[in-house]
Image 1 (tube, rainbow, N blue to C red):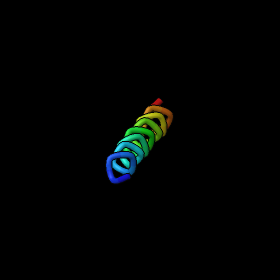
Image 2 (tube, rainbow, N blue to C red; image 1 turned 45 degrees about the horizontal axis):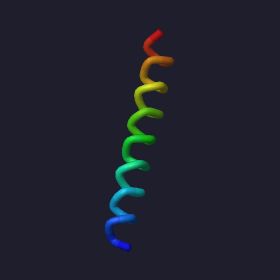
Image 3 (cartoon, one colour; image 1 turned 180 degrees about the horizontal axis):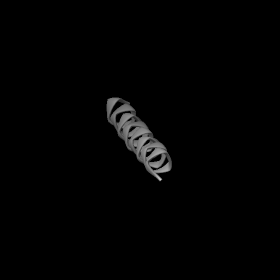
Image 4 (cartoon, rainbow, N blue to C red; image 1 turned 180 degrees about the vertical axis):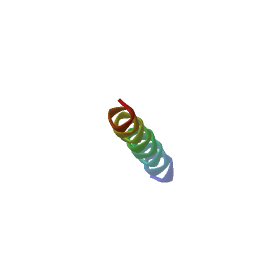
Length: 29
């Protein structure tokens, strides 16, 4: 259970990071 939760947390972190990068590039251009 905890391992699955850890994986989900990692995915959410990566997702948020990607969204942040996208927003950053959109604002930069």
